[in-house]
Length: 114
Length: 111
Image: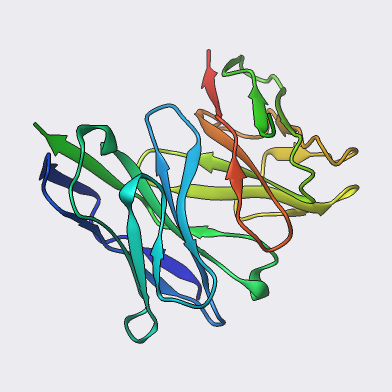
């Protein structure tokens, strides 16, 4: 079955500290992978995506993610977190076999301590 | 500016009433999607459409209906058959099998 797991429901980090949000997926074909961010009461904004090629992808707001096929993971990282990064983060998987549909993880809420 | 608009921002439904959520895009995208978001449950797909005059049920279509008469528009009707409609509804669009872009959402509340 196709699925996305974000093991951490809630994460708290101090401002300036590094961040890693985990994402594991199960998908039967070549996956397309996405990270989105959502501020309270808002829509989702695309942070970055992986379709093919270099497994380390750069996104907006200083985020990056690494695709590891052997581990079925696509973890999101940021070297130094800012208070404005506090939000909910969603990992999603799609692909050519999925007619454009995306499967979303449950989301990880990031809290940033001053 | 290109983008996706959803209206209204807040919508109130009375018992037994059908309500319609609007979604419009000017990105010239073929595909459009409706998701429901509940706390702690991520996004669940209600309906999607890959082309005008065609749409498919998603994972939680019961109690909802859609139409796709124009490429730019994909309205969602929450019918009286949907017994627990309180949620945040998100519309998205994409070129086929590519990145989905989201609207700002509509919050539906029951009176």
